[in-house]
Length: 513
Image (tube, rainbow, N blue to C red; front, side, top):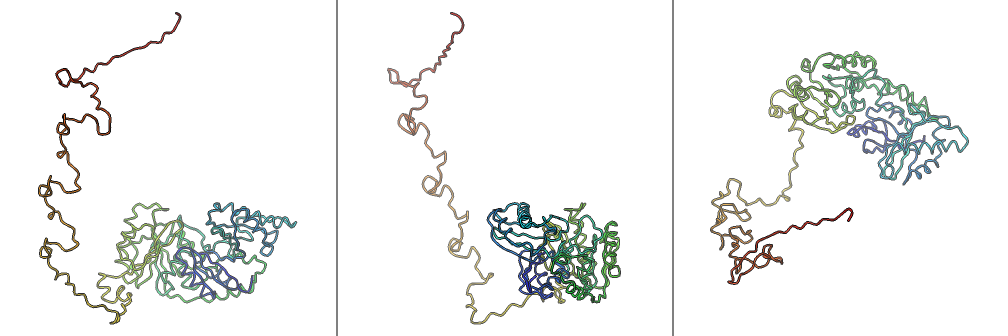
């Protein structure tokens, strides 16, 4: 690895600003936020710190090559030109992870196949041992990112995703991602200044991540290994220094409380808490939220209630209505953050949120909403100096020279009534009302206005149209159908011939004659 290199930290949606702040605290420079990623510059020590200490990063990637390719064959040729011996040996195992946003490359797995062929052919054509693919914990994990025709090849320094902390010994049916949990806590401003409560704790992810933040325990403390420890330039002494930086823990004078209505979830949460060695900081109880006692002092409440999407929920609306009622009457003075999936669930909470953040929980589009909890009415809370008035920045006074002359128009209640305005009771520009229109009999000659379609009563009868009582020919040419039966007799009277039909049958003879 060079003295300083450009690196990429992958993350989840909405956590990019939090990750950028974490990187700045680690000593990274040239930090730029992207879509679910943050790029930065740092040396080998920053790389080690990023893997060991970042709470909201999924992976740390080290870009090693970039080029353009318009088809799979060109991708193969470009990859085969690279000197793969700089990053791995012939006997190492490897794997490719591919992400594709392109009109040409439509199948990410096929991109991985072509990349594998290029790497294997590079070593075999040199007469060296063929490298083998291993999807589970390979020696080298490469990432290929294609955007249209731009290809970026990166080396993964993390190995397993960084959300796999190492403390989870068991899990419930729908556990919360550890990176997402830590990001929610940091967005909520949690640093351990109050008690922490999760009344629907599930497997205890939020509880454990809250304890790690409160004590300053690095998320990589429980990890057994990282991918960079298998690199040729790995520096064990430097990594030991990074671990030593996190040995001194912060004091935490409060407590973390979790509860759940499911006894199975409580057992799982307690098991995970013991595995993480945090039983002295966290208490997990078997009780429903409506049975939880009120905290003795203001606390931070963060919870991820069941959605009803992956879990069977009998009555989701009733559940969220109960959450709102309990927050209102049991946790006055506290701050609550709730992650939920459906907007109608938030509506049932019945409280006005002070902040909202859109994010993804797996494949589900969710929202994280904040609630400032108080007793009584919101107007009384604001009047006492609570949320609302003091958060709104005062409006800057407008300079006198920018103020225009005061309008001379009459105020709303000084305006004349509609019947007292101009002639006709209307102002210029008013649409005419039905009462202003003349009645049908008062319009123009014929009782119609210009543009009116003629009515059936306005049409002349058949005998009034032309001389003879009817036209001799149709308007578009040709005789009327019955004209061939009409004739005049010797006295000049019009007669109609009888319409006789003749049926003629023909037979085709067959057989012998």
